[in-house]
Image (cartoon, rainbow, N blue to C red):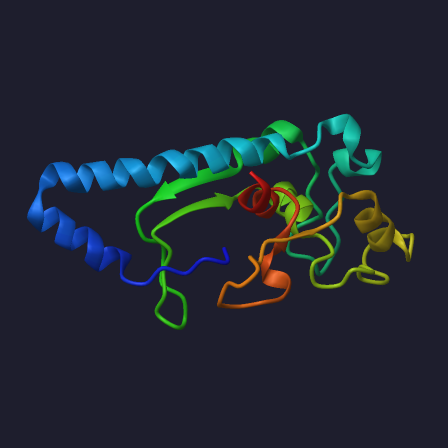
Length: 171
């Protein structure tokens, strides 16, 4: 997300020491908008008729691949959107996220991020069609840049997506 807030854990500890009711109230106030973001994100996934027909079929396993390309199912993609309360694992710089909405379904992640690293797709691959990834990316809705104007922080492809990032910016 484009917004960075430092000291959330320390803030919540200080509130907890002041008043238990205030701590519970702050947690509840954080939860409400995050649940709304999760619910709105689920609506952004296209139905099964709205994606390329080949994406509904499970790809066969290919030697040398860890996992085959995931088949798309709208229900599974929607159920992969999760709201988490509490800190996640720290990254290599020591930062963690306190409240977050994530996409835990592989096909949902493909929908969200396909083409964000390479807009023309990856040539070749396991497909018999050398232009398959470019055609796949072209059939998806455009990527949305979630970087807020005037905000500080990282710029670039990590702040782009089609479902969660779109909801954060436009809803």
